[in-house]
Length: 544
Ligand code: N01
Image (tube, rainbow, N blue to C red; front, side):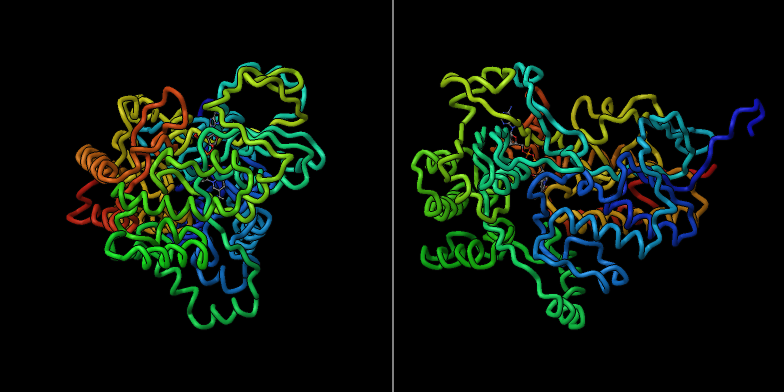
């Protein structure tokens, strides 16, 4: 008990927020240093995005084996069943981690962090939760990803609708039966493509409201043979794959080739594109292609032409061809996130599915039984909002985390996003964030990015603890330098030409600015580790 009879506020060395990949890898690393570690998770189970993402068809777009933690003790006795795992399997994987690593004793569920304040005397954060509880911690590490603040567009009259409305980001855990229903869906991003593809065959009618066509790529999904996977593990293929992730732009096993688009003849190009997109599938057509594709418009046009030709072959309805694969690309190929699809184009080509371009035919208002456009009233039973997130910055900016001058994170970014190496900020000592703004985040395989960042955080904390340092704050110079580099890397690509959530352009009125590091994983990880050279050169350190 405290001196005034108040209960004493508990203390933990490290507080991790969110129970996903980032916090689990950190937990395992930091407790090995002898630190006490707690995880506060607002949901009822672990899995991070895979706890919330349980909409029909939700599955990951990174392939096995790299969408997992790279620790041998985890992968040696867990084998994914599909090349691209679905949400139920990913949840099983998290249960596996919990069992192997004895995680449960560190995690508190239904624990919603509201805010935090740095105590300058103690060199500790005082963190408060929505249940009224507080905790002090030396190291405060939000691991809340880039998609924890969902976005619902201001559709007029939305609250009038008497049927059910579901946002993909908070899909009911018990599932929803849409078989035989009339469904309207807004959005054709990663979530929207998967929902439409999954429910399309069995609904009575689907009205798919689309703002921008998604340049989907064939997933080439397949079941994995467990014996084959065991052989690969024994041959060192898994370890090789994890190691390769350290050497590539996006933390995948493959990288851009060392050739420009027009170095090849048209025939060679056609063959190369075919191999990437059709034979190999997945993101190869995006991330294993010519090195100038995301930088040079003429090169990019070649990619678009090939993509369009492949898609048109799969759609019979001429109006749907026009909408889904327009002659004039609305943005350069690959500057918005392409989705991986299995039968999307065949599914939405069916007669009971309408595609409505909201640019040509805006939603005027939602009524009790449907919605109205200039073409009339459309009735439906269920409305699905696959409208995404206040991405990347929204997760952190929504929390009342106050820096040493009293300003919040949102205040810190008021005149433009700025961070030190996408992991920390001046005025917010002893706080690191993983898989967030100005890091490779949305341009990377999630587990690669989070594990490489976690390795750095481990190194920093280990050194600080050994040196008796109790306060570590990114310098202003390092934030200025990183933010300048962010813009330089971004501005020489074609990414600024797309109205994408990569730069916050999905939300009306939001500042449009690069949110993700476009300089690649290798450069990123090197910059992190270099920041500790010359006696913590990018950090200001103090002892209590
Ligand atoms: O969100 P999104 P998401 N009227 O922002 C549209 C990861 N993820 O949940 O493109 C009409 O991509 C919007 O249109 P536009 C992954 O990184 C991964 O799908 O902005 N439409 C868009 O079509 C992913 O990229 C996986 O013009 C409106 C859609 O809503 C990220 O999360 C699965 C609108 C939103 O798509 C986000 O994906 C799921 C309006 N007013 C998520 N406002 C996998 O690994 C917005 N839209 C498979």
